[in-house]
Image 1 (cartoon, rainbow, N blue to C red):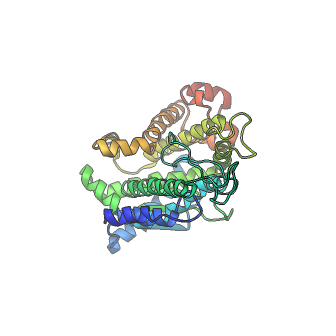
Image 2: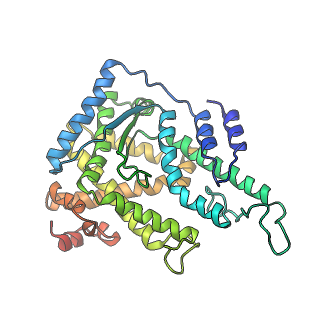
Image 3: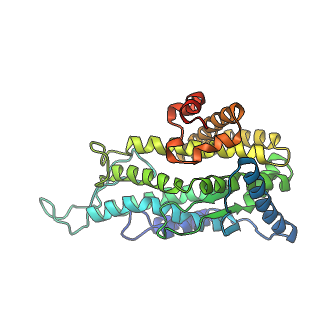
Length: 363
C-alpha cells in the first residue's frame, strides 16, 4: 500500500474522458493492501461446498430453479477492483460520451454540488475565439473525477465481502454473470466480529447465491434494472430519452424511484431467504454485522455516507421487513411471487404496506 504513489497516479490522469479509468484503478490498488488468497485445500473445498450447498438449500426452500454462475472466483482486493472497474465504467460511459462528444459542461463526478467546468476542446470557436483555460479546467475536472472513482473503488475493495454480478449494461448481452468472494475481507471481518470463519464464510456464500436465485427466478430483472439506469442517465445528460422537463437537470425521478424500489426488493428478499435457508446459527452473525455496518470511526462513516451505503442499509431493512411480513402471512414461496413478472414488484408505498401488496397480487 503506497498512498504517495496512489496520489501520483491520480495526478497523472489523462485522456479524452472525464475519468481516466486505468489511473483510477491503479490509484485504488496502490492505496489498498491486496491481502492474501493463499488458500489451503480445505478452504478451497469449503468455498465450493458452501456455494453448492447454498444453491441446493435455496432452491428447496424458495421453490426456485436457478444456476450459479460459471465464474465463481475467490479474489483478493486488487482482483475485486479489476473486476468492478468495468461496472463503474459502463455506468459512466453515457455521461462521458455526452460530455466529450457534445461538449457539455460537467462537474466533478464525485461531488454533485461542484461548479460546472467547460470541457469544450481548446480549438472549439466561441463568440470570441477559444475559451481561455479550457484545457486546464478539463484536466482539473478529470483529475478530480479520477480521484473520486479511485477513492470509491479502494474503499469498497476493503469492505466488500462477496458480490453477485449480473453484469448489467454489459457490451455482450449473453455475458455470463459472476460470483466473487473477497477472501481477505471475509477472514478479517470474521476475526473482527469474533465469529468462526468457516460459518461466516458460508453465511456470506448463502447471501450472494441468494442474489443469483433472484435473477434466475426473474429473467426480466436485468433488463428492467438496466432500463431504469439508462433512463436516469439520459435525463441527467440531456439525452433524447430523458423525461421532458428533466433532461440535463438530474436523474429522471420516476426511473430513480423505480430503481430504488426494485433494489429494495432485491436486497430485502435476499436477507429473508438466506436466513430461512441457512443451515446453521446466524442470529449472532446478523447482529454483529449490523452493528459493524452502523459503526466505525468518523472517516468510515463519512465514506459510507458519500458512497450511499447508508441508503443501502435502509434498503436491507425496509425490504426485509416487507418480505418477513409476506412470508409470515403466507409463506416464503408466496414472497417469491415478486419475481414472476415486473408488475409483481411492490411499489414504494407497498414496501411499507405489505398487506396492500398481498391484496393486489394475491400470491
